Length: 438
Image (cartoon, rainbow, N blue to C red; front, side):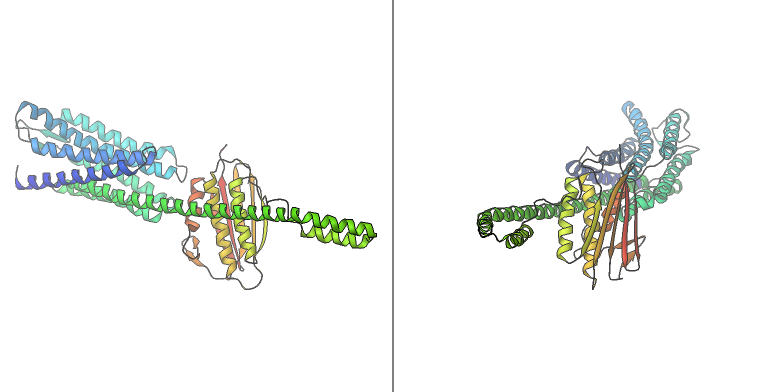
């Protein structure tokens, strides 16, 4: 091997080590029951495979022993085959990610997979015809007459994947969109360089860097999801604590009323004995008014959402905010309790924070209903006229940030819904629609 070959093998070996470290981290930390995580693990396996096969081909090249004859051919075949498999795995990964947000046409997947199939088929044909590459009698690799086609086909597939990502870019978190694009741009650049230069493993380096880039993106996404879950659990604990406090307060009031009943009965008897019926009627009216409410507020049939509503409506009324509410929500619904709590909790919390900055009368109107297979939620509130607009939405001004509007939009996308946020004449309106599965 020449100096360039030693450099190439060394870089490839380094790439294998880095990829294995990433794989071990993923296998240790990630839930393998998740389809996205399984596809990401598959991507890393294929990336390690393409690099190892290339290293083996370089190390054995030129060896004319019988075993080397077979190893060189198998290694080179696997190198090309793994290239097609990586493209297929990446396509599945992108589409699986999008399927958690929206519905996508089946044809997109078929188009890219057809490119992968053609690439794999030509790799097999090349073993007999040498169109991509051939191995001479000294067991040395040479590029074939249409080697360029082996680079163009994956590049076209990556362009199609990039087109899918850009077309559905609104379904990606902005930071994650960057990592998806970087994952594809690096191998595309490497394929271009491979057409012009020979001897350096651009593909191996680019594939490893792409895996690292996507791993960083996935880690950031996982961290963001964990923070969301922690904040959601904190909110739910706060809601449950408030619900428990109200229940305890209600029980204490009932106990006190029962304890005082003896004294009230004595007063009743005294008025009856003296015939002072007017005073008795007045006393009974005052006593009835002083009795605690014998029911806990029930805004909807869904227990989790009802707890959230009790918590935030109590918070609103304590802040002198007038609340009008009409919610129709069944006890059981295909949308998870956590998603419903994210939507109701964040929207009402944002409304309360906006009302607190208003001088004078403050109000919040909450309406929800199920029509057909759609859950509609509309929340209106007045505000001080100052909002921070970002993109096609508004940025929450809550102290400390909160989970906020992005989380609400994420839930809406997950359930194939729509969200519209409008501000007009001092009133902010959040109109949300979520699809219910049968």
